[in-house]
Length: 379
Image (cartoon, rainbow, N blue to C red; front, top):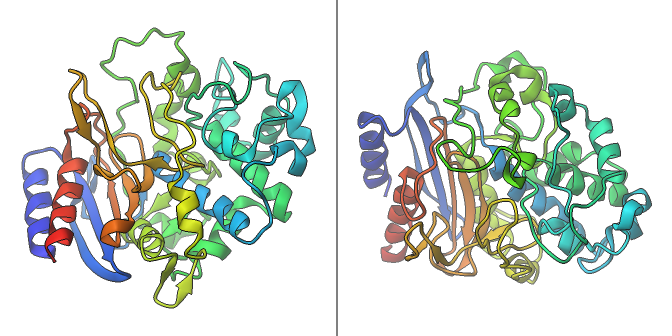
C-alpha cells in the first residue's frame, strides 16, 4: 500500500503541487500507510521526516472535539444542555440557552475576531476566554450556523475547563496524546523545547479567501481576518493555545487518533471512547448554509461529516473525507486533514506545508485520500 501512495506524493512534489507532505493511515486498528515526501518548507531543504511537525490549522478542531466527546462519554456533560449550565459566565448577552451541541456546531454567532486585530488577541488565552464570555452573538444563538474559525477553540476550551477544572491543552495531552503514545507528535500549544522546535516545518502561507470575490466586510473576514495569517510561522503563535486553529501534528498522530475512532474507539489496547459514542460523532447537527463559509456544511459537534456537496458548477462531488455521510473528521486551511471512515475501519491523516484552495472535488489532499480509500476497499 505504501508504494502506491509514495508514488503519488512523490509525483505531486515533482510537479510543484506539494513542498513537503506526510501521509498516514490505520485500518482496523493496524498501520496501513506511512509515507513522507519533500522538504520542510520554503527555503528549508531539509527532508520531511516521519516525526516532522506541521501546523495544521483547523484539523485541530477534530482533536479538540474528541476531548469534548470524551467528557460526554464519561457522563460529565450532555450535548443538549446549555453551555451556561457548566460555564455560567458564558450565558451573558442572550447566550444562556445555547447548548453544547449548538456551540460545537458553530451556531453561537460568535465567529468574529476583534477589529482591528492584534497578535495578542490570538495569543492571550485568558483575554480570549473573557471575550467569549462577554461576546454578543451576531444572530440569535441556535438559529443559524457560521464557521467559528478561531473562536471555536476558545468556546470548546472554556467548556472543557468548566467541566474538568483543567486547561484543554493538558486534557488533550493526558487523555489523547499520551494514551496513544503521541506525546511527541500531537501538540495544541507548542512547548518551549529546542528538540520540538527542531522538528517544525514551515508553511507556504496562502490566506483563506485568496482569489475569491469576498467583500472585506463579509463575515468570512470577520472570522479569518487577513492580518492574522502572516504570523502563523512565528514561534509566539505556534506556542499559543488555539484549540481550533494551530495544532502541530504528524500525519501519524491524526491517523492514529482517527484510526481508533474508526475501530470502535480503541487502538492497540487504548480506548478513547466507548463504541456507542462513535454514533454521537456521526450525528448530523446542522447542514444549513454556513453564514461565514457561504456554503452548506454537514456538521456534528466539532466534526465535519463526509458526503456529497456542490462544486462551483453545481455538480455534486465529495471532498477528502469521501462520499460516505458517516465519515467524520476535520480539514484545515490549505489542505491538511484527519478523519475516520468507520465503514472501512479507516483513519487517515495528511499534513502538508504548501497551502492551496482547490475547487471542491479537486486537489492534492483529495487525490491522496481517494487513493487510500481505494486501497482499503480492495484490501
